[in-house]
Image 1 (cartoon, rainbow, N blue to C red):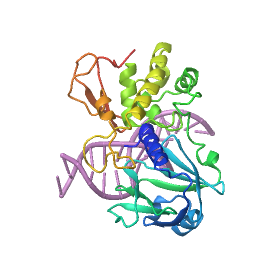
Image 2: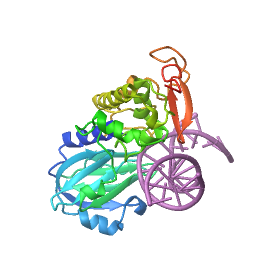
Image 3: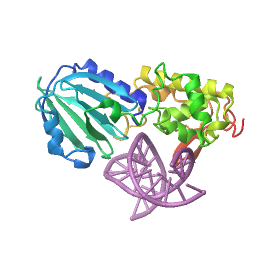
Image 4: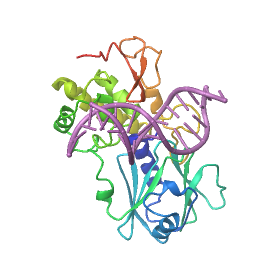
Length: 278
DNA sequence: AGTCTTGTTCGACT
DNA sequence: CAGTCGAACAAGAC
């Protein structure tokens, strides 16, 4: 599933494909609910003739800055994918939006589960204001993490998945970070010790940086998996220590990795390295 | 055929 | 009221 490292990989691939500087000529969509706050006709009209001036990521959002100071926000949710087609390439199943560019290429948004969302924002700061701190930015300090966690009685994993706390973590990287830090996912957030907060702070940055370096995590071969712009797979699956490895030995202590449902999400951990209580 | 999965939003509960 | 929790969304994988 696209989390921060996967979305960052998509943005880098689009940038490398020289999408910045192109102009959107024509827009088609076929699933009205994927466009937020706007009719499909208004959405197409807002984009046609607009030049893409910059491209960047905030949390799991892809942001296209446009030449009239508006922004196209795209969230891939669980199964959204982008690809760049050459003229004449056929559409495929689950292609839900097309953006014809002035160089003849076509940016295609494909999403088998239709959970992905597109949005036009006049004010990007307001549109993204619900998001918490960017975990690879200088604002993500140990003090910032400690302040947020110490104010909550919530189960730690649920709080880390909350995008208004730390923006960009998802199920894979939360499980990996908690294993790296040696902290049980069901600990209450405000019960972490100073030493545990420091371990978690380092672990979050570490697993995300490694995910980006490996160009994202692609598990299995189904279409629900992550594929970046050129259709290439991420290499980070080999770096995972616990995610979807239940029943296999823990890489650190060789105890069997457990799976449980925490906050309605499949959760993988080592009960020996990550004891229930500190 | 039925269950599970996933990120985010929204409504309900405490 | 604020914080927390769980249902809902959609459709492929198994």
